Image (cartoon, rainbow, N blue to C red; front, side, top):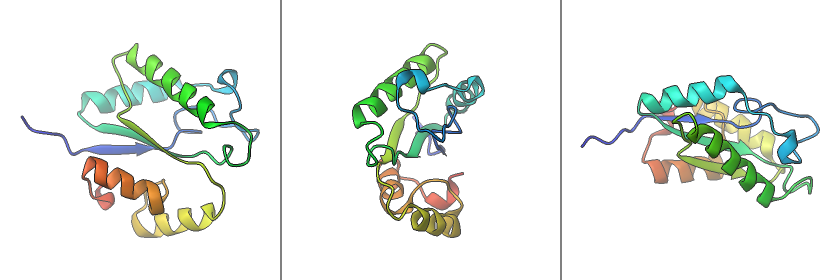
Length: 135
């Protein structure tokens, strides 16, 4: 059996769900994009591993906690499951210090929207992929 090594990395807020300058502070604030659900379903059908790599600085700022983040992830998975889709893994970066430096170095290195220092290494080891080949 051939194992797929195709991977897509998605940000969460503003890509999968509606973003808010006030932060997503409750389940009621979280609004999933129908187009994202369909895109994820298509990626799954094409045998891509779909992961989320997301900055969640609202945790370290005290606007919400990890429990809410996990509840939203469960809600997302349940909505995807209802249409035969799934997210393979979620990586989150809960701090806000030095985010600009992380993003800048990442864009220069491989044009992928997630944070190179911690998340990309976790993703690389778990999924055995080369970051330059992800999009």
